[in-house]
Length: 140
Ligand SMILES: [Zn+2]
Image (cartoon, rainbow, N blue to C red; front, side, top):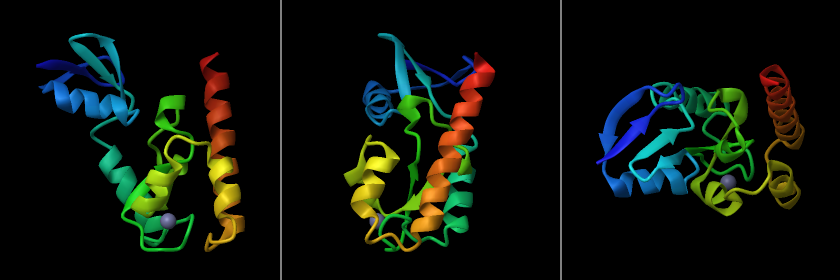
C-alpha cells in the first residue's frame, strides 16, 4: 500500500499503487518517496468545488459550448493551480482531454471560434492567472 498525504502533510487512507500512479499521472499528486504520495488538492472539498463550478457555468463547456460533465483547471494543478472554483471551468471531457496540460491561453486561441462566450472565458482565465500570481507573492 502507498501512504497518502494531504496538502498539509497529514496522513489519509492508504491506497493501492495503481491508484497512486493514476493520481500522479493526472498531476493530482506527487511522489515523496517510493512508498508515499502527497496530494496537490484537498480531497474533501474538490467534489464540492467541482459541483459549484459546473453549476456556475450551467453545465456548458466553456471552450466549445457542448454539455459539460468535467471541470478544467485554468492553471494546471501541476503548476500550482488551486481546486477553487475561480481556477475551474466547466468543460466537456473532449476539451478537457484535448487541452491536457497546455496553458489555458494556448487552448483559448485554438477554441476562440467555438467558445460560447469569449469575453467571459477570457475574463475567467485572466482572473485565475491574476489570483494565482497574487497567491505566489504572498508565499514569497
Ligand atoms: Zn468542449
